[in-house]
Image (tube, rainbow over all chains, first blue to last red; front, side, top):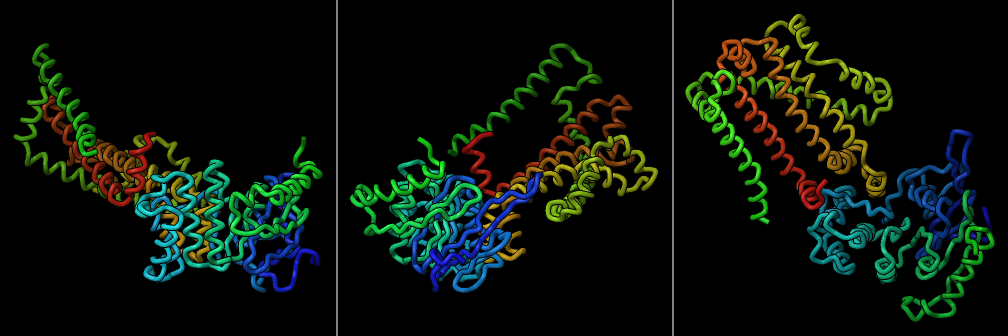
Amino acid sequence: MDEMSVAPGDAIVFDGLRKTYEALEGSIEALGPLSFGIRKGEFVSVLGPSGCGKSTLMLVAAGLDDATSGGVIIDGRPITRAFTDLGIVFQDHALLEWRTIIGNVMLHSDLRKIPAKELQPRAMDLIRKVGLEGFENRYPFELSGGMRQRAAICRALVHSPPFLFFDEPFGALDALTREQMRVDLEKLWLDRRQTVLFITHGIAEAVALSDRVVVMTSRPGRVERIIDIDLPRPRGSAVLASPEFVGYCAVIKDIFSASGILKD
Amino acid sequence: MRKRQLLDAAGPLLALVLLFLGWESAVVLFGVSEHLLPRPSRIFVEIVDRAPMLALHASSTVSIILSGFALSVVVAIPLALAISFVPVVRRVVYPIVVFSQLIPKIAIAPLFIIWFGFGVLPKVLITFLISFFPILIQAIVGFTSIKPEPIRVARSMGAGPVDMFLRVRLPHALPNLFAGLKMSMAAAAIGAIVSEFIASSRGLGYLVLVANGEMNSPLAFAGMMLLSLIGILLYFIVELIQRLTTPWDIAQRRLTPN
């Protein structure tokens, strides 16, 4: 295990995780081996170019895909099947099109067998917080992309999970909506301080949201550098205009330039 | 909204009325013989005059259509599940089923008489043979076309196989299932008539055949018109159930044509 990036007591530990895919001519190294840890209550982004295996990394951590070797340990337990103590958001909103917005947020009630009464207040509270009030009885197809993704975030938060996994949640949204969603997500996270694994390819997005950014190489994705982001929260426009913020972004750009992912 | 729906319904109805009016006046205007093409009004009179006899034949046809259709549903949906979720079945059985559809079904229908006699069974089997494929194909599309993300979300909520099927895969498949059911219902109506052409002494198909043989065109047309009516009615019953069970899909299609 890489002593530099994993500390004792980490809530999530990636332990020599490696993933290969079988292809026509032998196997393709997709990911790793990589090791790093995420502390309890920490917001960590995994930032890398497309195809570096960062989405796979999240799927393995969620127990939704298998590692070829190594693995992921959450709260001391190795992940061997679907991990359920989390909220999860994908780039595709993944709402069930036959359920209304509130029906989607309340899906937990049916699948986890939680009484609806217990979830309802928190569900309505979240729907209000993300600005979907009045739309709770609409179907997903009636909503804009941004609104659907807000509903997906409500669904990930409603059962108050200790862990949140995001796979490029704002990837399909326009720049303005993206900006607003980022601000709203930070606000929601500051309420509860869940342990967050956030997959993205947006440098500014990663820096603005995270306590630490794990910068990855291209395929096979490995940890290139882990950067502590020491900026005050909430990170409003003043923070994002500060030289420190710009400095962090520049450092990451330099890393990508040095490895040939970004070219002048 | 209400006004637009009314207009949407009025259009086709008006077209139908115009068609009958044009037909009626053309027959009268050109003095077409009743044996070649009876007037619509003459056909309606025939239907009313012969109502009890027609009803008897119609009920026989409807029972064949519904039996064949029910058999199709009962066979096609479990088979679709097996083909969708059991790789061995998908590899071995699926090609055989598809290949079976290349056999001209109407041509093998007479064989069914040899095998199963003149009772209800061969008629139901012919109807089944013609109507089961659309449900099968649409059900397979429905069960397999779901994207991985909703499945992953459900798994991360601890969904077991039963919940996964009942709450995720099945609702996703419903629009396709209904598309298949509607196509199969239409096909079942055709299958029942074919079966009555070949092997029957009852039913509207048989009646049309006999009326044709006797050059009794008004009766033949009366039979055909009833057959069409039955086909349309059965189709709309399925459509109605679809509207009640998949409101999200209906609304979505109304908003986004194509």
